[in-house]
Length: 130
Image (tube, rainbow, N blue to C red):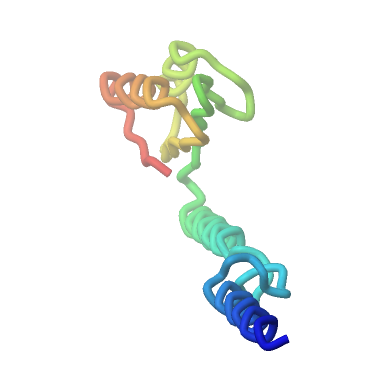
């Protein structure tokens, strides 16, 4: 009986040590106290602020149009339609009036994104990267 007590005491000490050192023997589901990771909420706030800023600009300057070109992987999108780079450049050159071209990187490949920027630069088309 005297040999069992020190062994049990040692086991209890080891269990408590593992619990406090984070060996996964705790009783909770996680290590934090909040819900979620916070990243999504931060991104949503930034997107809402960008949307507000864009709408404020459009209210203040009704003459300037915002033209968005999205590069997604190897594809280009203009007016919510997939378009080839040559056709995109032609349409942008034909576009009349003042406009601000916003180039949006939606998980674009480096080659596709760089090709677009090179084509815009070589045709003297001004743009803003988003």
